[in-house]
Length: 556
Image (cartoon, rainbow, N blue to C red; front, side, top):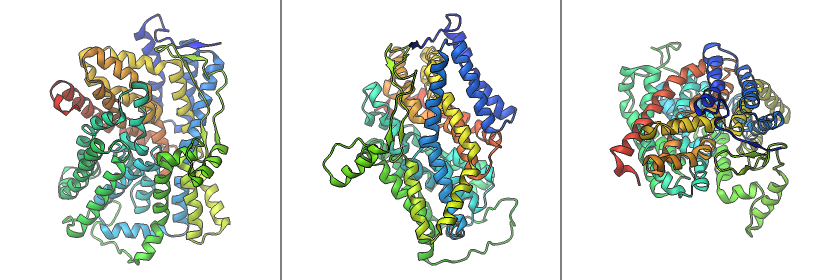
């Protein structure tokens, strides 16, 4: 029995249908921000509400709705939760063997100033991880590092979520941009160019924004030279690489240039006063123990190894081998391909695969459980964890204990993630998201202003800029053509707007909370990031509107 998506299911009205479709979103905000429910409770109840509405209001068969949820839950486990488990595990290993003290000292040796540390770790290092891996790894690892340095867990998580705004559009080796080429036929390079003419404006601003949130205006001005070095080097590199190299490398290159530039700059310049948190002794100078270059390298080696492996996993040719799709003649890659094929499972989702008819294209939608066990970024991190055991001379017993304690530590966030991804899949399958998108498309001449809101909404629901881009790319392209907007600008706006929704996505909130030990306090994190998400979204809306109506020369 097939199910055809109906975008006017409620009273034959798009508006009434959209009003029903938005109920789970409003409920989730209420549950976390107002009711202050624990994340896993809010996630599970939101999923339940979405299932009920899908069946009752959108006439979706019960089996189809439930199995759509199961497809999302599986995706929540692999790759998303797998990344979080392995990322936190790697961090816990360094803490367990005492190596994180050396990492902390190496950062403090560059500067004891908390403002600069936030720029180095949350902004630059986090952007590098976003470019290499995406999903939850950047926030999980960089937030854990900041907590290890002495940051308040809530601030550490919130700052890393906000900092993650700058790189998300080009995350995971450019996949969010590349994903739009298929459904639209517009070359990824053209979309990359346009995104590269929007996000750098934000990227210059983000470092200033981070420090301002931490300390206020006066304390931010004190480190303005460092803020400018961090933001400008990142933005310029992001613009050049996105416009002349494509979507694959802007994050990695921008992050490296920004990180190195700021570290070198700090060798020649230091702020007049060292900023520390109120809980710290403001007058005391921290005693930073000096370690040899060899010891510092050894302490950082798990994260260097992690970066190398994640980057390797992200190379397209190697990725195809890891997932069993390599067709070349290289002997090594062929061997990896055999193992990748053995560890890749794509069974059809019962009652869903080709059983849902897309309400816009009238074509059946394929649905499989996608389990790429070897190709998942979390597997690369797990291998780094395994090799780290030998680097630090850790016994199997302690290594195993650390793994189990990590699993116990983040069991509830895993439930949260699976629930909210399941909810996203149900709303997509039922046509709820497309219904909301069609309402925004009714804005006509104001569509360039509201176009980024689609991406923001999509990333809030799915937790992924890639998913939001795939979901709305065709709608953005078609609507832009109807209202006289450049389709390339509309696609870029979807991706750029989406990055501002990442910091409030239930998945991102759960990841950040798990990484810094705030399990059960997700509502505090959402309240911390929500206003900044809206502010940055408005910035992208204004930029897009101006580029469509006044600054047309910026469109490639």
